[in-house]
Length: 613
Image (cartoon, rainbow, N blue to C red; front, top):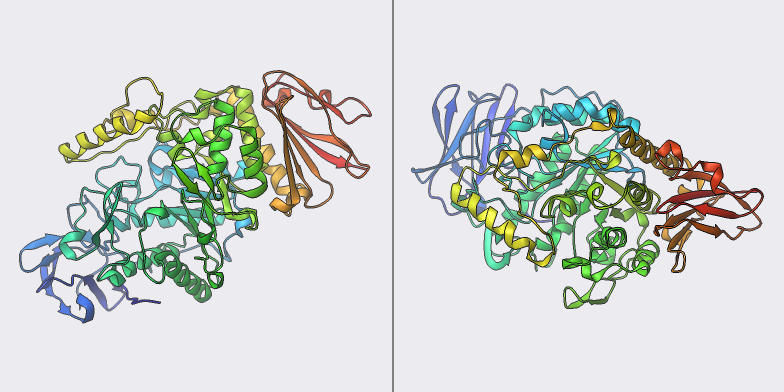
């Protein structure tokens, strides 16, 4: 493994605070203590351009900036808290004072993850970590076993998706800062819920990004959609890699986070002999050995490459899992009929069958949209390694009007879609509000203080939608109204149909957790087929007796279906999405003809059967 050393400020009770910053091109570096008393500390240059020093007088909570070459004052690139803005002083954090109450929490195995992705600012009325804490009992009651927080690293202003963060080590001040995050993680673990944190190692936001003042954090070798690429393989790259490795270790070690979701890893550009992702995984493994816990790295990638997942000893990077866009696109195109933009590569029933049985649809075949051959074969990779969803922040929020499936398909189809996610062999993920059919959109929003930058963002959003046949005007990302419109209403307490949909999600989750056939969720224990005549998808899980057979009626007509007897077994109805208790028009027993294996599927409905002797 490469050069590894701690960076930033580190407070130790009785010893004060030490400071370490990488600034290889600087001739002089000082720490300017801003509060509670003003002071200046000169740092000493060490090997590779690291500058270090310590002061017994600097306590936790003190604010400071670095002064480079006697003139330029900047916040700490590894700041662990920005009490005011991205442009002002950093604060010293004491990681020893928080009292953890997790008892024997060791995390959850990946196969137990049922992920709930949420955005801190819009999930609750408060828009804070504490606001999420209040709603944890509702998520636990639903059956959620892991929450995934969209990025919480300090960004400009108070409204942002989080991908414009400029201080990767600092939990957003308006969300509750580092103490608020620890409190939330602690509360989750007490409820038996794991925490996944979305981190961004492929680019930095523009406003408040002062990394160039410190050193060659970026390289001109590559370009990304967000500008110059971070320097993972050029001169001085060891220290940029160290910066992000230290960041990952901090979240897992000091904040007790269970898993990191790595944003757009295809934009982590590294042609070196050992890819950054492999080195990161090796450090995560080492931390796990030291703490007796297993930490997970989950990649977002659009390359359909199993190298991310394959074991290091087999030439892979050894990551735990990755998001699988193919599954989302196959489901979305079938239920909405949309085929514009990147959806042009999808929309046929056989796509859904293929992704259920093999993982990637584009597994070394030609993509019309990309005009090139794409992907590798994922058939042999364990199903748990693929995170699937029907909605997420990208697929909803990157629509011009931020419409959820609630606005795009019928109520009955929402239940059908729920089954496609929760009854698949893969690791399921829900997007906040999906479980009850939230009506509010999830729009793209920012709160840049730089007016020129805000205008560039507006222009960029308009251009982004040119490939899609979406009508209307893109909402202003900078307007507070855009942010407020995106807040969840949690209206299922007052809305009967929403309550029924949520109850259906709860029943599906319970089925996934308890049915013996789901105890060994592997592609090899599953068969899928699509009947073009009836427009019914058949999905059978045979991991363990009794088997489970799922039928998804994509047509708008009722279908009478005969199901083959399984080794002499007959079938009984476990779950019928068209049942009146889920807001449908029939009841569970009405689906089955007495004494036969013939079943009536209502339009756009899901019927789940279990074999019986």
